[in-house]
Image (cartoon, rainbow, N blue to C red; front, top):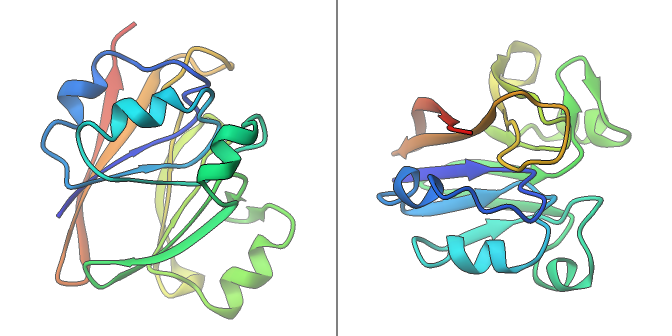
Length: 163
């Protein structure tokens, strides 16, 4: 299964997402969607699982929750918008991760692309896809594709979206 992972679109649907996510089976949106039409466009390619972010209004909050915990092809996934990062978790996230670390933790908010294994949390894969929108201090718009097969994750591919 190929998964497309995006965050912090802030209402901007980057035209390259049509090609980048054309062959994915599932899209994860880690919050700060902006208008819900961004999700509608993503859903034309694949089912979308998302969380709302701190700037999302009632339409997105009515569609998504703050946290999502699901199993994808045997991989336990937890996604939230404000998660922090290894060593500097957001309030309440660190204790919850230590109590029951997922295989894959996806978050957004920082606009900083970061993918790493966390040895102290059963080698959990931490993934922040950066930001695909125009708002924020990030210099490059990014998203990620990830392959999940038989409970194993591989091929995390970072995509730089053109200006």
